[in-house]
Length: 101
Image (cartoon, rainbow, N blue to C red):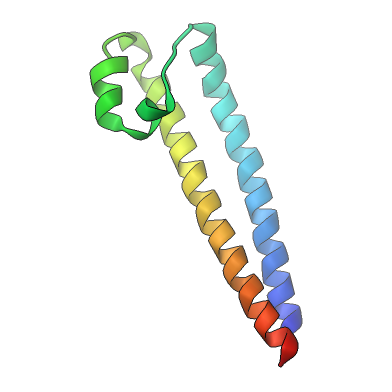
């Protein structure tokens, strides 16, 4: 049981590392397009679609797709990282419990 839990934690850590690298590459591609065209928006726009649609999309109508893709990738990578961190923490707690038993 101990070896299985260690293997699961190592696998989750590697998955989190791969996910981070994968989304970093995808986000950076879109980010380059946004920087090249001097498109600026803040974190409040990134996490609030209504503000994005009201304030940013009208300023940059030609780049709505790129802005949307960038925001989706950032949100998705944060969700996946949160889930993986919670799983690693959970399995770490279980591992600590079974270490003493």
